[in-house]
Image (cartoon, rainbow, N blue to C red; front, side, top):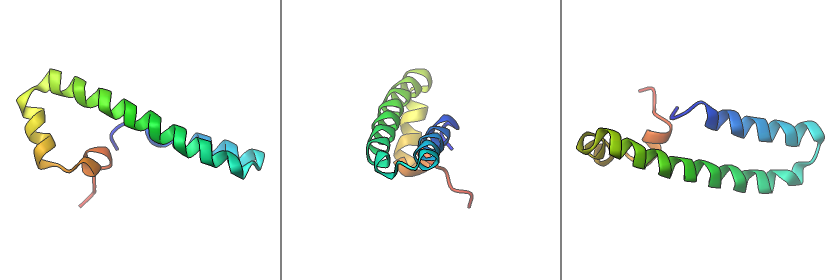
Length: 74
């Protein structure tokens, strides 16, 4: 996992929605989580490029985006 905070944030919001029995709140929660994660990832990618330079850019070319976010086991 790219950062353990992301799944924790998702589980926290879903947990609150189910705990309070307010299922409709999942709609803004899903939107908020997606926007938050995409914004954070964009910033992280820039920091990684600055820190590791061409090495990280090569990694980005070799590894699809979804696997940089949630790596596979196999």
